[in-house]
Amino acid sequence: MSTVGIDQIGVYTPAQYIETTELAKRRQVDPNKYTIGIGQNQMAVPNPTTDIVSMGANAARTFLSKVDVSQIGLLVVGTESGIDQSKASALFIKSILNLPNQLRAFEVKEACFGATAGVMMAQDYVKTHPGKTALVIASDISRYGLNTGGEVTQGAGAVAMLISEKPRIVEFLPESASYSDDVNDFWRPNYSETAFVDGKYSTEKYLEFFTHTFDDYLKQTQLKVTDFAALTYHLPFTKMGIKAQRLALENQDEATKTRLTAQFEASSKYCRQIGNLYTGSLYLSLVSLLHQGNLNSGDLIGFYSYGSGSVAEFFAGRLVAGYQNEIATNHMQDFLASRQKLSIDEYEAIYTECGKVKTDDYELTPEAVISDGEVYFAGVKDHLRQYKVKGA
Ligand code: CAA
Image 1 (cartoon, rainbow, N blue to C red):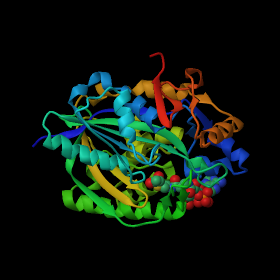
Image 2: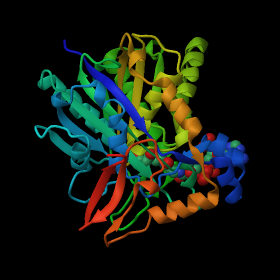
Image 3: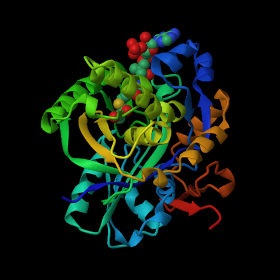
Image 4: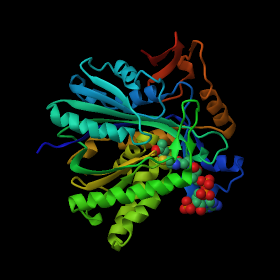
């Protein structure tokens, strides 16, 4: 049977951030509520030259030189921060990355589940198109509004993944368990720039859907919790994953609890430093685990994906021998340590600027770019969004 999985994975996140303890002070909240109660320490702040296209392209550019671009036959972008009601962000990204025209490129929306829908489609595509690969990009800016309950759970970033036969990082197992229902926990009407969310109800549904999909998955595969080296979760904020992990660990032996708890810590480190990536959050947890966890080839990793509204899926994969050679562990840690810290005043000013709706032409120059990625949003001309590559 052919194996399909993640051959390459790359992350992009903005180069500016705030400390949640400073945000807590400004909002007159006990800092422990943010760092312990919600479980977030820092939050990435995107500036006006950053959008889902620039972030997605920058994430893919971290590994494109290592793959045969002519074999990419499918490009799916999962996002809930769309830049156009009609044209897919995937087409802007295709152009920036110089991908072949012989390509199926489109965008998928189902809240934070969009990228997982892409990963599932990509697996089917690769299985039915021998030799071809698929590029799946999760890219989002999470905005809840200044001085709202959700403010501390914002964030931004993109994760790009190449799905292929004989993958070099993770081989997916063929089974998966999904669960869908019409739920009003989080939505963003066309007229609103920020999401409407019932955070507590959303957590309740996230946990309920976890139980449905995890139990179903174990039943289908006859696997046990003890078989997993690590479980990764969609992490809008780390506390949400802690609550799901508690359910998974009920009635387990101490060794299993200790192992899975340590790996959860590793998988949630980047979320604590970056915040919510919406569609990319689960895959950022995987990258965090690969960089910070204690894993061996052959280890089984579980994935819990949840998108409000709501759709959830549990699936799993095994680490491929030599996966360490494919992930740039130090680069990400060095980058996070080198980001520029913003004061709360600076963050509020950037947040407000990013939220302005502009209908006339305008241009953003490379001097405005604060990023370690070279692709940036350069403004609007004749109602068309412009993208440039720094130094090109
Ligand atoms: N010290 C330590 N802990 C403290 C504390 C203190 N001083 N004060 C409070 N806490 C704890 C509370 O006990 C609570 O812990 P538990 O959850 O374990 O009970 C936690 O901190 C949060 O406290 P509250 O519930 O009182 O906080 P809140 O009313 O401000 O709500 C929130 C928190 C629900 C997370 C809110 O920030 C929110 O709505 N965030 C956005 C919601 C969100 O991200 N939902 C995910 C949606 S799914 C997704 O990602 C979207 C998608 O698909 C599109």
